[in-house]
Image (cartoon, rainbow, N blue to C red; front, top):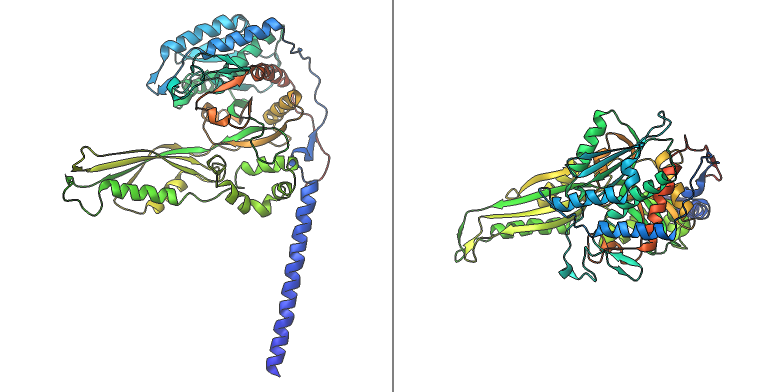
Length: 522
């Protein structure tokens, strides 16, 4: 009898556990379903009525469109290439300086604008506002470009600015002369029409961003620091309008970068005794190092999807996905592990999931019949927002796990702080308002930059840093970034000029309108 009672108690306990499990699953399903059809981070809190300001209409005449295109083409035709920190085409930079002065006479002659040359080739503009109690902001862009060789498969010479099928081809069209010229062209048109800003703002044009900005951006920041300048926000290059890039998303999305990944360059070294290739040991220096490299590639850094700004990206865009993706995106608290496993399958989405590891250089050997006494490899890592540089270095040590391999940090820095992007974030909301004013059908969401920009040097003087330019990227376009056939449509460049034209004026509000809740978020 005792055995039957025990079995009966176990059976009742099993029923209770099973019922609890079923109820829990049902509750989870109900919560997830409700979130799917009611949860919309981007619309959960709307701003009230914006402050009325006097705005100048953005109408461009046919002649102005012709002139702005000619200025832009001239900029692309100047090969301002930065090869290394010590090898930059300074002749081209001087030529570019002359172009700016010729193309934008109002900017360089206006009493409202103070221009300074920094480190010989970078530019700092101070545009004085009428209300000095308003905290200033800053627009950034960079003049230098990465190298380009027509032999790599360009459809047009990379510094020709050739016009084909409504596009301008050339190095710098999307990185980043479209912003350099767009910002100054917008300011030129505003000054021509008698514009005077309420809020002071700065424009910083670096000349060595592609080689870390150590002369341009760093010294611009030093100049501003010496004057006690504190910035409301900074807007630099970074993310763009993605159209057809995000699978399953209904319509284009403008992603505003609220942070960027950290970076590390790590050197792995193996030293062994030299010898003759006819009497090789079981492992040569190359073999030891190759094994270490293989372990790094076979053991990627941990998945961290959902612990950085990428979570906000999907939550803000969830309502623009169809089922079943909308169900998944609205419930990242439940499905983050699933999404991260899917995203890590492709290199372009894997970059959002973790700290990436790329072996970029491998050097060894002096002669075909000599055992190499020295072997070295360089590894470039882009660090996820939820990790630190030190954590990454510790993981590399545990993965390599070989005392014969020396691990050395060449250079690196932690991920940048995550800038605010809620309804009280002045810079984010001004950028968002400008985007939606120009492109009402475009969704806006925060994002993470997987590359690095000059803006990282401004973190000590800026409350928030954002990374965005309204360049439109369709499928295949992201590969043009630092690649072949870099291009921008003529229409998109005109839009870019108008974006900065509106953005500068939108910043003249004293403060954001008060938010009001239109629905409750779960």
